[in-house]
Image 1 (cartoon, rainbow, N blue to C red):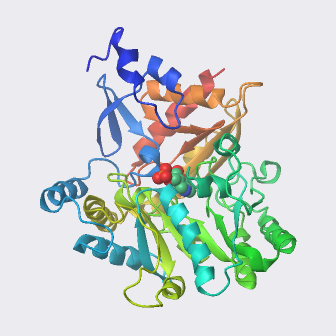
Image 2 (cartoon, rainbow, N blue to C red; image 1 turned 60 degrees about the vertical axis):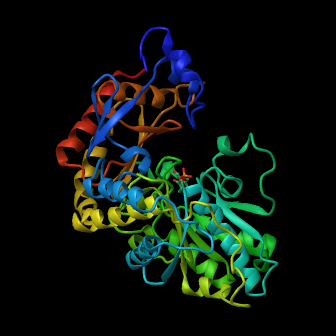
Image 3 (cartoon, helix red, strand yellow; image 1 turned 30 degrees about the vertical axis):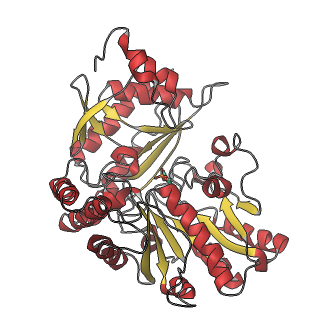
Length: 442
Ligand SMILES: Cc1ncc(COP(=O)(O)O)c(C=O)c1O
């Protein structure tokens, strides 16, 4: 394809790009044509340092031989097996490996193809679980302001990002929201978990009083809210949420689509924070982003509630054509092996101090109003341009890209989540480039 002259707008017009400013992009395209370990290569031959692990998903970096070979071998061996009423060995093997990696109470994995589907699956399992237990009146779902749970109707209903909700009608009925936990006046520039805000979990008691506990099925939160701009849970907050859910028989779902697979320096945030939910949603790092796949992890208590009635009957009327797809399962197995062989979660934990210091070195630069980080995730919040929200951070993203560094922006926040194979020199380049860019921003 010619990438120059007048052909470019026409060539690019058919693809309606997701979560993209299409008109801006098509005037000034940014194309990756290959990737290896920490770097992408652009169509004009430039190297770009990956500060975001693709979209928070390539935790082992790019072009990892074990994963590439596993997918190549699998596609030539078994390209597809029906997901319903039939199986293939690798899906079972991956489910076993996944529950071995997960904290102890999680004994079962239900496969999906994305984070959004994992969320829909978890919400449906929560509703159906209560019904199976004879509590079918528990139909309400509680999310949180600023929460991101993907883009399907359940996910945007419990989600709390206004731009993702307001164009799409009335959404699911019977949903309420906890307040978000962002308290910049008290917590700005905290390294790691903020001190203030555990009391915000008590808002769940208010919601329970308002609706009646017996009407509430589940609470879903990201243990660390990623897509809204990296909001870390205040100390004690998740513990409090767990206590209130347990007290009222409400299921707690952790959406670990970003925090799963080492992002915080542990397998899962549940383990990291020492708080066990009833369901965990995953995707992204499960296959290192290579083949779309997600999984919902369930405790034996939840799974076993469905295993009743005549044996020939389907227990859960839910699933996808590509649940446990052979290529995805092969990629997942090779990914988990790569994480283990290279001890990547411990590596992330070991780099956290250096990462935090690098991030916080940006304090005092123009427009920076907060810095947050944990594990190998970070956010730099900028003062918005008056009347033009998101523009300052978007300009920073464009300038970083021109200087050979990929960052991600959400609102006026620069979010970072590099592959866990990052070296200290890469951290210096990433943060140094952002510093240079911040000094030149309007
Ligand atoms: C917490 C969380 N849930 C769900 C999703 C949706 O995942 P996907 O884009 O794979 O549907 C994301 C994506 O960023 C996420 O961060």
